[in-house]
Length: 211
Length: 211
DNA sequence: TATAGGAACGAACACTTGTTCGTGTCAACC
DNA sequence: GGTTGACACGAACAAGTGTTCGTTCCTATA
Image (cartoon, rainbow over all chains, first blue to last red; front, top):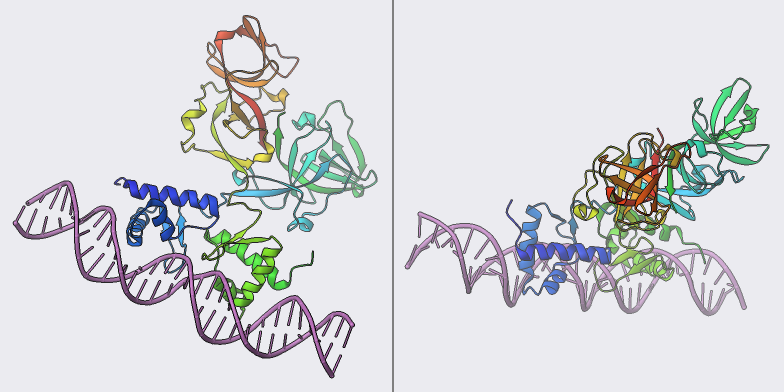
């Protein structure tokens, strides 16, 4: 493929910069003015070249119809996950449905490739050291997938009704009762009846900022 | 503040969706057509209300001059960090300058709020369990900030020349030699001469997908 | 009942912006 | 020298698009 002329490269750069500044694309005359070109048809000519090279896309018959290819409409594959509270801090977690549209005070955003699943996710800030043997420490953010059942041995956030608190533990069904096993050898497991617990979600990911 | 009318909310939603699809904002007539409004002036009227409420910004006298406030020009505060290799696998890490513009095979993207620092970052995939005591496990991704010196006690990725491998350890200057201290007290530190090591970067964050 | 103001209407108007067309320059090539 | 193709020019045109204005409908309130 032949190289772009200096003018074509300048146009491409300008469009890119303009889009960064303005949230809407430039007009042909914007480009003309910026680059000191004497005619709009020259801009049109060069835009046609750029379009042939598949570097931009043009929507005919509409104003400001220039799009840069590659940066497909802004966000990559970013998922925004609401941080809806702390865990091991005592408050029940609102069910995700409640907060779909809500402007959670805080959200974290990361590539969907890092996640096995992108739906029904929410995040909690970890308080305390009860999961330190599961490589989860105080201050970490855990990402959870909302679900109400789980397999034995999965790490889940559990709402314990009589204690009125949420905690992150490995979960084991043991007949009538359940065992909630901390991932910290210095801590004892919690035994309680199956109907005293409510599974809130399953651990999906951990994010830690090292201070 | 009074609530938005149904129509105003619909307009806002439409603009948002349009922007997601198209990379350029809708015209007044796009909105009119979509919502089945009989006059452009009605749209204008409601856009004025939205502008007063500071929910959108309008650039007068230019086509498609509607901007949504809040989502300042596309990407939020996402930083893209190249994943440039594995750690504890033996290969030296190319200096970040080398790959600024390169299309690294893989990048991870996350909110800058999760990071104390957003410049000079790179990421490595952790191989093996040697850092399990620093709450870092096989398969985790560690985010590092490129730097060639460090304070005593900081966790850094170190290239050990004679062993030809990179490892993640706490770093202590001790006169002529350096001490590389694993996080686990039961593991012995590595002592070596200061000129046998090259600091690659300092640990900034850890991201783990739980399988 | 009378009045005021929010919301909507329809149409005309004027500015913005993409498109087209005839022309000109210049270097490469037969 | 003549031809061709890439690139540029300028001007006029047509379509896209924001703005304005007089009017109507409706509800709340005095």
